[in-house]
Length: 342
Image 1 (cartoon, helix red, strand yellow):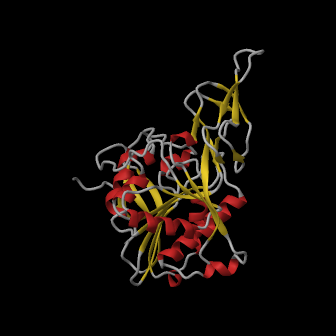
Image 2 (cartoon, one colour):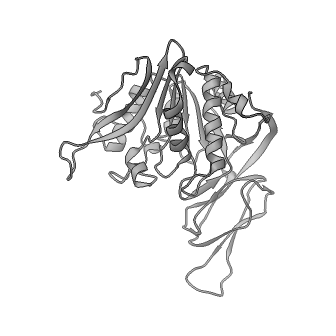
Image 3 (cartoon, one colour):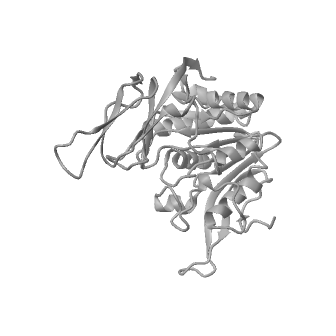
C-alpha cells in the first residue's frame, strides 16, 4: 500500500513533551500548497505502555476536545512511564466547522476505517490512524458525546467481543474510567468504526458518551477529566494520584444493550415530546415520547413506547424529529454500585 500523505511534526519515540501536528497536504482555492494541521501532543519517558487518547472523532462533541486539550497542557513527562499520544480534534475539519462530519468531503470519520491513503481527506485521516497510530498503541480511549442531535447519561462503553479475554481487559479499563455508568454497547452499524479497527487490532479499547446537545457541561467535563486519569493509571502510565483529589468513593452502574429492542426509532416527522427523562426507570410498554404533527392542528400525536424495560440511557435532542431518527435508547441495568478503582 502507498505511503500516507500525512507527516507528523513530532518524533513519537523521543523523550519529553512535544506539541506538534499531523500535517495533511490539502490543495484548495485559498491555498494551492496548503495543509490541514491536526494538533497533537506526545509525552514519553522510559519504557512502558503506549496510550492513544482521542477526541473530536465527530466535530460537534466537546467533552473529549476540552479534557484532552487540558491534559496536553498539564501532563508532565516526569509523571509518565511509557508514552501518551493525545489527539484532541481527530476529525479537525469537522471540529473547526462544529459539525459531526467534515465540511470538505462530508466524511464521517467514525464510518471511514480502515481508510485509504489515496482517498478523500477523511479517508486519509482514518488511514493514518489505522496504520501509523494504532500499531503503536496498547490502550486506546476515544471520547464521544451525543453532539447536536443526541443526549446521553454519561457512560464509558465497550462492545461484546468474540475474544473473551480481550473483552475482559476492555471491561476492566472501562471500569477504571469511572463514569457514572458503564455500558456494554450494541451498535446499529459497526462497519467502518474506529472502535472496530482498534478491537480487531487486539488492543484495549474504551469509548464514551458523556452528554450531548452540541455543548459540554462542568459535570460532563469533570467526568472526562477524572476518566482520563483513571484510564492512564489503569494502563500503568501514571500513578493513581488523582484519587487524592476525589475523596468520595465512586461507583459505576453497569448497563447492557442486549438486542435491537433497546432502540426506539421514529417513523414520523414532527414535534418531539419526550415523556421520560434521561436516567429514569421505564417498563416495557411505557410511553417514551410523542411525535406531534406540525402540518395541521387537531390531530393526535403518535406515541412511541419502550420495547423493553430498563433505564433511559439516550434520547433525541432537538425539538424536531425526522422519520428514521433514534428517539430513545433503553438499556438494562446489570449491576449497580460497582466500585471504581481508587
